[in-house]
Length: 183
Image (cartoon, rainbow, N blue to C red; front, side):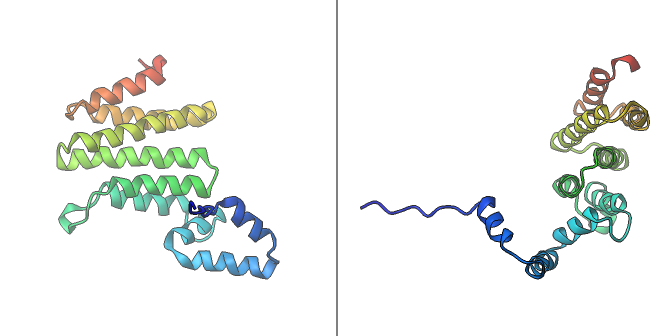
């Protein structure tokens, strides 16, 4: 006789259980989640705009991850920087803030290579992917809010002239495809 497969729990199952909670039980659950991890604390602080400037705390994570001080044996960790942007996006529905973090990510990556020289194609591919996402987000913003981001994206492209691995060419291609009137 074949074994019965256990049903995998899903959000629907969790939701069904949570609906039966009274306020005290719900607060206890949220408190338990808050204390469970630093990411959860960060999420609640961002969602409810608690503590320090939310963008600044995420920028600090990105800065430390993608433009570490190698002299202090800090490690380059692009995944941690990308994860910070994803966590911000889940905590807040804020395209402008998300765009700020994406452009900041690219600025940090660009400054890292200007400070320490050519890196590798994986690094540049990551920075180019984020540059593309930043451009897409910029185009979703109201026209009056796009200007400052376009200027910063253009400045990144200009400052990358001479950087290898096709990085500068990739920046130019992405920028001018999205903003052809700037050519």
